[in-house]
View 1: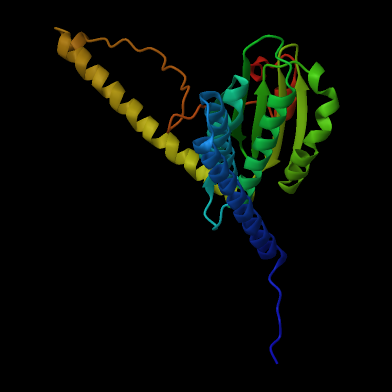
View 2: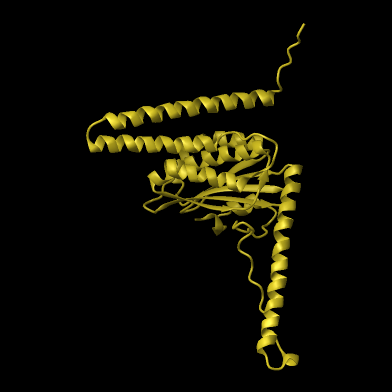
Length: 290
């Protein structure tokens, strides 16, 4: 007799999510085909233009759906790259049409695939929430995604330059993001200002993620130190070459500028106070304003 052994809950959930993703992808592809065919058959430039715009919109949402696919494997993923890819898809599908600018300020952050995917779901929810409910009061709309790591704590901040008044009744829509944050062992807090609103996701890294990110940070620092040393030696050699009296050569030294970017073009974030959420949510913390 064959004994049936059910798959673990995690595997069952992954299979269901992949099947759901496949079905939604097929549905969107079918819709694109139908509207594209209608755009060819219809008469009149205005109707063709309108249907073509619908096709472009559907392609944009298909890109977002692909970006939100649950990744497989066990290899840690670079969350900054994942979030930027998702943000670019959202920009084409939604934000450009609403004349809202999307900006990024992301540090390197390696996470386990499922946790990286959950960050993507949260970012999608929060950016969509900001785009729908922000009151820009005639200002050019802007949403910024900030991703930082301080020790064993990671923060993802969604900041926009809209005021609070238009979204008091819409906070219930953040329940999905808050449930996803709890699955990460973290929490979500909101901060408000006269001309900005921020939503802060804060969550702890796992031991594996902490070790990996510490290793990455160490590897990023070492090449910079060698580059500084080489530049210092070159400066001294040039100064000696153009000074008549080598023995009395004086090389002027200036304090090195504080680095503003890390390896790969990512923005460096200075060390902050232990209460990260308190700092980010403080009304006087102007870096949260766009």
